[in-house]
Amino acid sequence: MTTAPPAKIARPAAKAVQRRRRPVSWSLITAIVLAVLFVIAAVAPNVLATQDPTAQGFADALQPPSFAHWFGTDEAGRDLYSRVIHGTRESLLIGIGAAGIALIAALVLGSIAALGDRVTAAIVNRLIEVVFAFPNLLLALLLVSILGPSPWTQVVAVGVSTAPGYARMVRGQILSAKNAGYVEAARALGHGWWRILGRHVLPNAIRPLVAVFTMAIGQSIVWASGLSFLGLGVAPPSSEWGALLDAGRASILQAPWLTFIPGLVILVLALTATTIGKHIQNSLEKGR
Image (cartoon, rainbow, N blue to C red):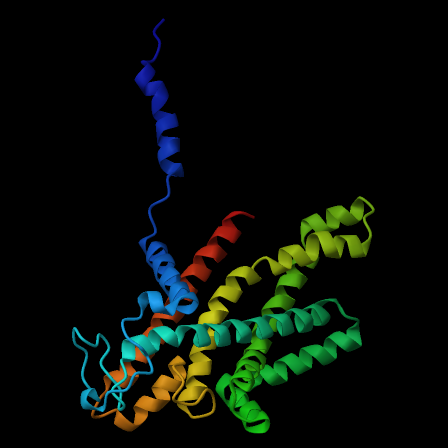
C-alpha cells in the first residue's frame, strides 16, 4: 500500500489560496488617490494651490501652461491651476447636494410607487414616467428659468431633474426585495409586515444606493457645470468649475486651455466617482 507524497496533498489547498487572491485593481487605486486629492483640494486648498487664485497680473494675461503657471492664466492674469483647486469645494458641494436631493426624492417616490395602494402607486408611477420623459438638461433649464439662477437653484434643478431615473431604480429594488424568498420565509414565521419591511425589504433595497450616490455625485457635477457654462448657474468670477468654463468661452480660440482644462478636471472627477461607485456596487453584489 502506497501513500501520496505530502506535496501532492498540499497542492489543492495551495490552489484554493491562489483562487482566493484577487488581482490588484489599479483603476480603483488610481480613483482612490484622485479622490483623496480632490478631498484635500476641497478641505484645504492652500495645501495644493501654488498661488493666490484672486491675484491679478494683467502683464501675464492669457499665458499658456508653463512651469510658472501649470494650467496657464486667464484674461486677468490669474493662475488657472490655483483657481481650479479653490473651486473644488464649491463644485463638490453642488454635486453632493444635488445627488442628495435626487436620492432622497427617489427614495420617497420609489417607495410610494412600490408599496402604496393601487391608486396612489399608479399616480406616482405616472408622475415618475412623465418627468423621466423630459431630458435632464431641459428640465433643469426649465427649473432655473422659473426659480432664477443661483447656486442653490442649481442644486435643486440638477437634483430634481435626475431624481426620476433613480426613483425607477428604487421602485425596482423594492419590488424585487418584496418578492424575495427571505420575505416569504419571514411571513411563514409569522413576522408582521412592518417588521418585514423595516428589517428585510428596505435595507436590501437601499443598500445599492450607496454605490449609486457615489456615481451620482460625478453626474451631478457634470450637469451643474453645464448649467454654469450656459450662464444659468454660478457666475464668474467664481472659481466653480462651471463658472470657469463660462468665463473661458470668450477666449476659446485665443486661449483654449481656459475651457479645456476645467472640462478635463470635471471629466476626471466624474470618472473617479464612477469607478469607485462601480467597485462598491460589485462588492455589494458579491457580498449577497
